Length: 76
Image (tube, rainbow, N blue to C red; front, side, top):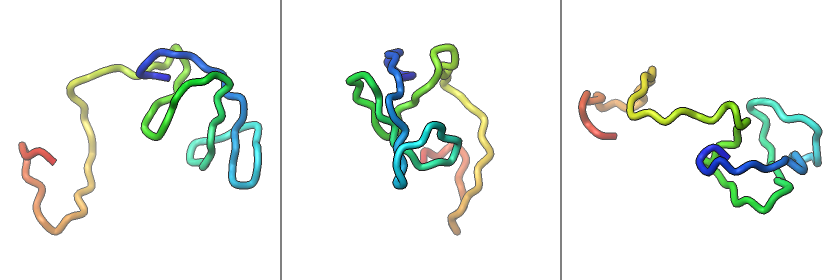
């Protein structure tokens, strides 16, 4: 897991139709880990060599869907 640095092996990949061998981006799956690690929504599972970088700034393109104007400098 990215935040803790703990390593685990995936025991099963489960879908609504049963177990599968491989999952791809966009698939709705449940990962069953072989180790007793509490991982939940929002946690990142990554390869050890691909841990995310921590930053205090980032660049993004936003699509603003509100009728009200987005105000630069305001917290949202």
